[in-house]
Length: 330
Length: 300
Image (cartoon, rainbow over all chains, first blue to last red; front, side):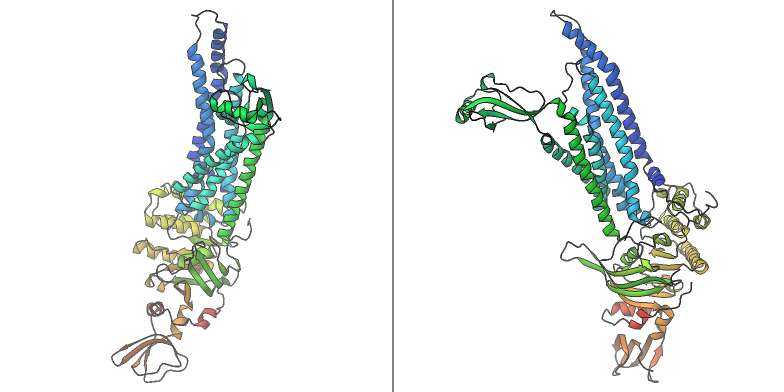
């Protein structure tokens, strides 16, 4: 202990104490990010190379019994799946922590009130609770997403079992939507902590919010960009156009599109009756080709970030009304 | 420094706005606390004492009315107000020394490390001990050190001495009183034990059922009230009767005399406890407006 601290007026060091109070969480997050990043780099380099070599051997095989390294293929596939889910878990991890530890526990045990009766206002306290974690979460999740994208790209054209760009886990783990979702989880969890006044309910609320938000994003995402449509004659019974499917059905004699997702490729009585009823002459399929990847990602990210900003504003207004701070004092 | 520490006008706080049976924790509270006083906030459990202190500390906004703290809106005087909540919240993972360092970091320009460390040292606390390992009384000591270290002009203490042993209670009360004497700090402390506050406080705020029942200088309140004994058939008008009780042919009452009392009445000055209990037992007794409004000269 120092005997005398010179009373130098300056900014309150809220962030320093935020780091001190949440040091274990920060260390854990760093460890998780470093570990998953390491695995992703491994996946991108040696594992992808080994798998590609095995695929090359397999593709070159012309006889019934030729050797190729099947284990390498399976290994790449497994590690890819694990890391994808690890990246996708980030928003939930952040939301659970934000709800339980960042605000929930402080509201529950009254230490938030302790902080508010030092020289800083509740609004500044809350701002400090969001600012650094937002930066850390963005950096960590952003790094994971970037490395995941690189690891996935490394297999393109070389690995037969590589997930397509529109495979949902891959789609999300490859792009910035996950980063935005992690930020939304941070704010949603912190807001839940302010509202629920208990760490466990806030943890559950933070997780639930993130899950529901993700579900909502998944529902609207295909409609965020105009789809491409491919049309084929009915006889071919297979609408072409690889990519993220949105809708498919039949084209009638008048050129109208009638959506039907169940009669895709079937000749059963029900479907044949359906074709007859509408006088079907062809198939159509609305889908997003690979070129729509970035527009879809960026618009979804923008939407989630806008919602996050709205929630942040809501949390500040709530705290402002509750504590009656007239303005953000210094 | 303003000469008024707290000034409430028609202050009210309601919890649970959504329910129809929403309860008012405080209602229609108007009082003035001059700066430099040591004020006891007294009342039964659930009377609204904690709510009043939390409002003054800027932890919640009033539902109606105004509460001025050190001359400005509550919450704007944050840097000049110290607050110790009833359950003495502290970060359990920090050590005692870290907790005090945090006090210095969060109160830049105000922190008196020596004063804070002296309070902690008075309890033989190991600075390296984690807060979670401390007893209730030890935590109270650290919480008080944190609140006093920022050299507040107004110190709000919610049931501060509840979990202290008599020795620590005596010592810390001494620390508080010397703080008040040395720096002119206004101290507001709540308790439901009147005896705990009688010796150290000079101002009283009696709260019952969410309303201010009595407010003013303790000496003045005791002077303006008289305990009288007379015959049962005596008419007590024009005096204000706080409480009266007839036992056989004997009438005892606590009154606020409005005129000189007849010589044949036996009179006496009530104790603070008698005064408090009389008001609390009789929610219908009118609150003396003069006492509520009386403004005292500032000490500071």
